[in-house]
Amino acid sequence: MDKNIPGEGSALKNFLVIPYDELEAMNIEAAEAAEKMSQAELEKKYCDYLRREKRLKAVTICFTDIEGRFHMLDYDKQFFLAANDNLTFDGSSIRGFSAQRESDLRLGIDWGSIVWLPADVFGPGKVIIFGTVLNRDKSLYDSDFRARLAELSREIKKSSGLTANVAAEVEGFLVKGLNAEQGYNDTHGFELISTGGYYHSLPLDPLKKFIDTAAEAQRAMGFRNEKDHPEVAPSQFELNFSHAHAVRACDLIQLYKLVCRQVAANMGMTATFLPKPVSGVNGSGMHLNLSFSKGGKNIFYDAKGEEGMSKAAWDVVSRILNHAQELSLVLNPSVNAYRRLDPHYEAPNQIKVSAVDRGAMVRIPAGNERSARLEIRSVGPDANPYLALYSLIGTALKGEPLTKDESKRDRVRYLPGNIHDALRLFRGSEFLKRLLGEAPHEKYAHHKQASADRNPKELGTIVKTSEVLFHHDVTTQMLWHKF
Image (cartoon, rainbow, N blue to C red; front, top):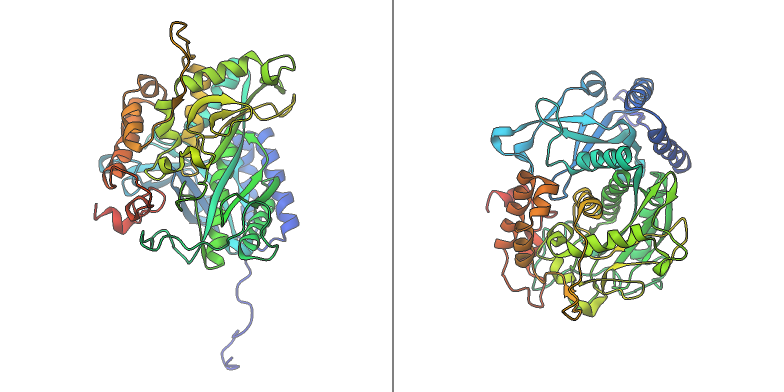
């Protein structure tokens, strides 16, 4: 240190660092405030806070494109306070959003979604808030399925008094090296960090250290953690958190993946949410547990019903099973996702419902009047959670029920075995065109077709370089321009 340089060695920066216990209390209070206060009240509350808190330097606004990629923009706090009603960005630069002719998009602010971040994971002095993508005239942008899910949730609450409650179980793999997906080579594959498996990894092995660190960060962010553990496959993990209303549940999924990726990177590793990054072991799923409540009461529960479920619940099962094949591209959006749907690895590829068979697309977990729910097991961890839940809830309420032809014996139906069949069924679905809207339906199909075309048609037994490098959640801007 040069003693002649004024300030050398002294703390020149004083950015906000909040202890984990205080952080958890602040984030839980914010989530509860979002349920009670209007957007105008929340805006005043948090703008006043941002003005008072001198140690905050920036506000991160995040949003999700139609394929499910998570995007973040940092705004200087003073600029954000002065211009948060007029934030614009170039949508044509984001694959899966808009064409060049409609490049100017706006960002609205969902003030109730604010989250304070652990400084040791993400750096000090920031908060993150979810944005709503808007057109130039501030109308909702039809490819922002977070906004559309919020709108659908308001509609069913107003028309039927229903609230969709969701809990997600998202699995991933921890592999050696930074940016291991971008550097993937099918000759060598991913290098696993641990050979341990379900429940029995050593307390201080790298996988368990990663899980503990991610769980601590999530707890501080108000996730209301339930349990966390290594999963069945080596180097596989799952961290569970409490149920929430549909939009917040999806926000937590996106933040969960962000936390896991950042914690892994901080440890010199990669957290990947490819559905099947390694052949010969179980893949990763994103099981979505869905129920509806009315007046605070779970309408899926009936002590006298089959498997303890009400007629309303069985009606939802019927509609989801009826539309299962055409929904597959939404729930399993990548070439790699169809590698996971292999019945040899507890994969849910059968279009049926069961209380015990984990090969069934829909499972009925043991429950009571509070926890009765449907577990949709066929969803991949790389699915856009907002689009997936918008489609599932829309199908649950507006889909056609499954009808039985008494003249034919029952046969088990299966989900598509590859993305090409899933694309054909998705494109041919008039129901999904109405539910999603023709333009988003075609846009989504276009991007999935492009992904399919960049890969060999046969999956084979090796996870190929193309299905990793050209995956929608992995692909870099440099690669896009080479397509």
